[in-house]
Image 1 (tube, rainbow, N blue to C red):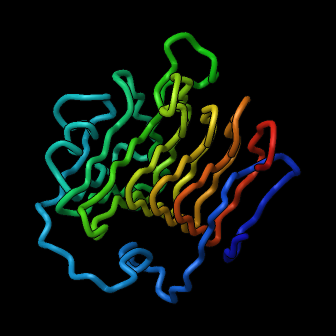
Image 2 (image 1 turned 45 degrees about the vertical axis):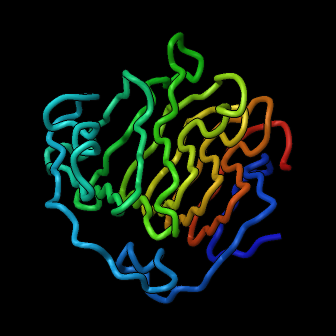
Length: 239
């Protein structure tokens, strides 16, 4: 059973698998922090903003480099509409003492982070896009993604890792104004959530789970969808 606000499900295909789906009313949506932080926890002083200036997978000015060195990440305006193709595996986000914010809201055409497998069957295309790990021991830290398109990820590895072609979340995650599309995994083609995930004004579309559950979303944690569209995800079963 679940509750949601403004959820649009398009088509009759299976779109998400979730024994637990929670909605918590929050009247303020302007600040991405207002979506998370139910106890109004104080925020620690962050480091200066890291600005991504390159579409390269790694190296100076890259998103990978900024993730290693910063907690607040934005993008240079000339990257608007561009694509970062991951060539060395997923972006792994470890959040322990400070929140991590990756914010592309300033880009009029957004930015795409691609797992590098546009056909979902290309040789070597076996990388999800994001892996998010648990926060501090009190659950007070989170990852915030704003204005990103998360696409062309694939995870068909064996065993319990076969979850989340676009995103595998084991921590606290907030997505705002994001699109999760054209990803594939046995379970949770678009998003596999084992922690707490809140999605606001997001689209989850055209993801695939050929032999498992949750073509769009597989959820065994706590999941909120607000003003989201879940459409055209394909898989063998709704549950």
